[in-house]
Image (cartoon, rainbow, N blue to C red; front, side, top):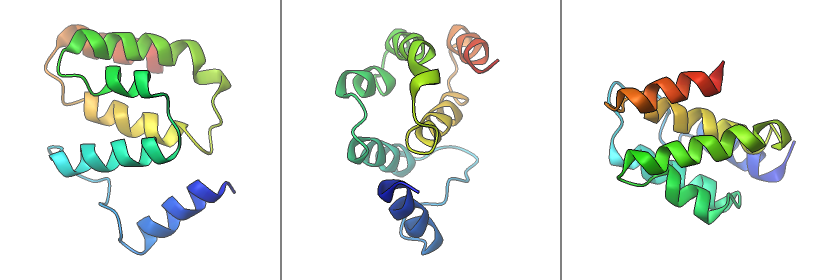
Length: 105
């Protein structure tokens, strides 16, 4: 198992990080995800698009993810994207949600 993933799993087990279980995401969850993605070396430009206030940037991020998702190491990076999509589930932009489901199918 990758050392970063191993550390993340240990942190979750020892309750050093927020449990990814919420009715409405708080800023702490978004901050934690950003920190984990930054530590894992996720592309800065992609992260900027993922967490931008304008949903049009989210669409760009989803398009970029759709192009590279098959090449990503599932054990290292994909858990971040699943968390990201769970956050997007709370978006009120219908177009974004449709794009999300199109990506995940």
